[in-house]
Image 1 (cartoon, rainbow, N blue to C red):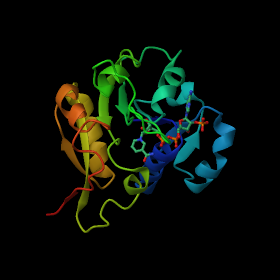
Image 2 (cartoon, helix red, strand yellow):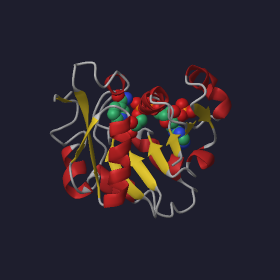
Image 3 (spheres, rainbow, N blue to C red):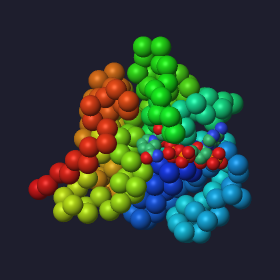
Image 4 (tube, rainbow, N blue to C red):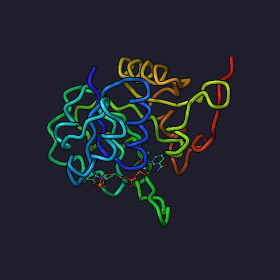
Length: 199
Ligand SMILES: NC(=O)c1ccc[n+]([C@@H]2O[C@H](COP(=O)([O-])OP(=O)(O)OC[C@H]3O[C@@H](n4cnc5c(N)ncnc54)[C@H](OP(=O)(O)O)[C@@H]3O)[C@@H](O)[C@H]2O)c1
């Protein structure tokens, strides 16, 4: 299975680092082009390579990690996702003001699903700060918990297996309507808790 990452900032780079640490290849893209990502790809060689957004979007599983207001521009013009898995790592709030975006009464994952037609969306990797996400998942002696949720059972199995392979304890929160709402920031009760599974 190929993996792509759209967005190479704090969360995109954190995901690249934990994939590289586990010896998993992935491509990564930002808005300015692959030539601006040489520091990151040198750090994470030979596992992570920089590509264009269109190339990263061709992977079997694509992480999207872009500031909320920039998602439409980042995803515009990409072909239908054709049933491939897209991992929504995004939160509907942006620094420095952290003013919640107007979602029109919907969950952020509902809005996100509308931006990736044909994708099987799994919400995950959004509820921890980047520095904690990229830290050793066993640094407290157990396994750090990563929540995930989605409406496609097979897509959730794939993401859950990857989470386990990366050394985390994956906790399936159910559908997007239920689970993504619990893990949504702002609004959900679960973000920012550093939960660790022992035993
Ligand atoms: N930071 C955290 O601790 C944290 C935690 C959980 C979830 N999140 C969520 O993760 C997402 C990313 O946050 P971040 O903190 O990683 O942001 P960030 O550090 O500001 O990085 C944003 C990335 O998005 C890229 N980007 C911006 N516009 C783009 C476009 N039109 N096309 C392609 N790429 C584009 C940027 O590329 P350029 O630099 O080339 O413009 C950059 O690589 C957000 O939705 C945020 O809510 C963040």
